[in-house]
Image (cartoon, rainbow, N blue to C red):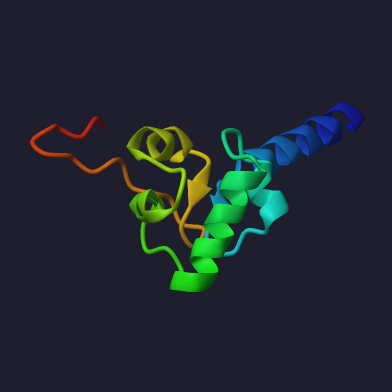
Length: 99
């Protein structure tokens, strides 16, 4: 029983650690915990969000200083909009979307 409980706790901790961070409600510290985001990019997200309102899609991050298509695609698995799963990358100029 003790082993089972320890295993359950480990699974719960890992599940919480793997949860995507909502860019519309995350604090700077929460954003900084995302691999690929440091203090500068986390602050840029928050500043943009405060000035322009919530993000509608993760693709809106390309409007934030310091973000480009490649960095957004790398962060896609780590971030969410409103705690819902994020759709796959959109096709760009005739390029097919990878499943």
